[in-house]
Length: 187
Image (cartoon, rainbow, N blue to C red):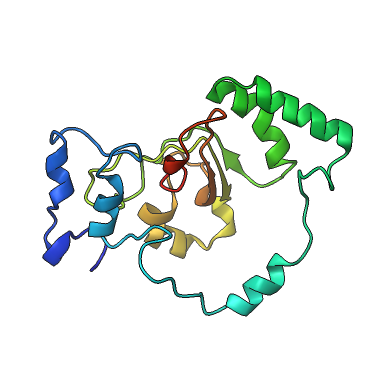
């Protein structure tokens, strides 16, 4: 079933009727996951999982050591300070300003915070809220051939701003500690 089509190729779906026509679905709505499924978008754990064709290369890459915040790789004092900061974070703003920078680390990659993706084509039928990740890593416009960029603009460039980055490929949704974990997979 192609994206943008409901069951039987019909643009309507049963999840549309659970909300008023003007309301948009979010990851917090009971009908959200079913809406995605009806448009051919399956979250991890839905049905049998097929491994990617480059599975061996992925496994090889996964065993390479990388920076870690575990106590065995992080200086003890810095780890204790980090755990204390987590304990003091009482809302998303605290997480964004004090906890997340340690996780993110230093990077020269273009990124954005709280950027609404208003220029992308809808993922399904326009019934989902406009994406607005708390943080995302992107690529610079100049890094992609202009012909390709122009042809795929509505799929890869989330903003109409001329200097806005594109090809968002890493998203983070920040939540305060002890949030309901069932929403983390659908964010």
